[in-house]
Length: 51
Image (cartoon, rainbow, N blue to C red):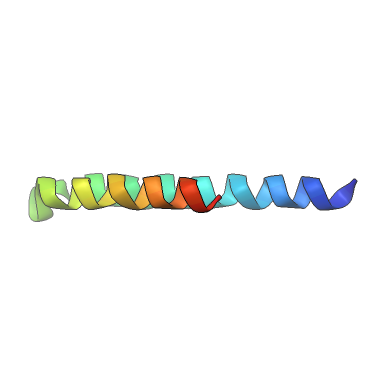
């Protein structure tokens, strides 16, 4: 029963990592513009597919 729990925890950690990464990109939006936001969305979708 421990293995599924750790797997879920890893998924949650990955999701949090993606969210924090997106948050950092949003903070830097002034410098980087909308292109970076698009890259962030694509990266999030790819991560979701891998998870």
